[in-house]
Length: 258
Image (tube, rainbow, N blue to C red; front, side, top):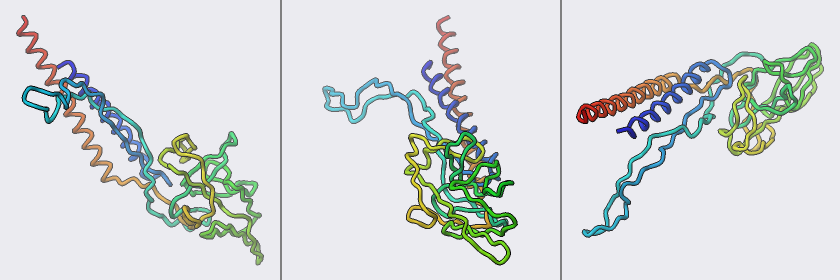
């Protein structure tokens, strides 16, 4: 009965963590380029009271006797299913239709990654994201120029009647995108689990194309998250009832001993 108390407590902790993740998903339902997280659990160590292969006088037992110790959180991973596209009409609002990430230069100078294609131009003409971080490779737009971005990532600037290419946007992909580290601010960092970045041009094998004038919305599905929220709440309540049942059994034992 004492074991049941701790086993049920692990279930409550696991469901509490799942609710925290679901709450974050719902809070970011309108965040551009946001990718929802999922929670992964595993069962804990089992106490083997009787081995499955135990030999008896009658023969070999078909099954043993093992009692588990609950569950625990293994990991949270990003789900990179595509989000809904929203038309903005802004030429530097970009969407990657397929796999890949934009590269940004952080304040400390390291390379970080994002699916948020909400770009603009700073006072020096550099293409930057909403936080002012420069796009990699750096693109400088001439003053009073009209910008257009092709599906292959080439950026054209038109000044008056003169059109010129000012560069090409490159994308990055990873062997395991789910292993990227979330840093907030719609950016991700490389980790040991994600593998090294693989750079390529939009439209190349393994990379999506770029569409200008659109933004990718969050891939959070509110209905599914609410169903998960209700499921976790019920599982939490059930685990708490298991604790109450074990407590009542302990109370009965104590009364007998008196």
